[in-house]
Length: 90
Image 1 (cartoon, rainbow, N blue to C red):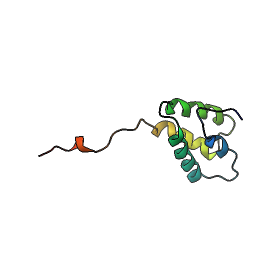
Image 2: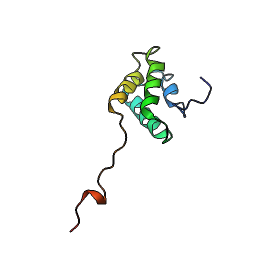
Image 3: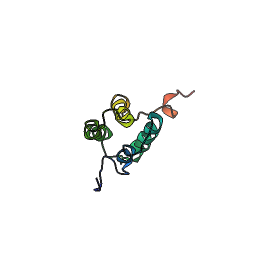
């Protein structure tokens, strides 16, 4: 795949499948970098689904495939935590 892929702009997922002996920890690190590299307006849930469809059929036992599967259940929209609005003022 040589064309620009909006679902994998840095080709991180693509390249992870080409690394011999890659393990789950490395795949999780790559996944985090992938998630951070997506444009804000790009729907990460749909991108993840398309990537999983693309790679699951050809490499079902690859550790990145498992990370992508796990990502489908744990990847959610960021939520605001804490901040000045969460505490009452005296």
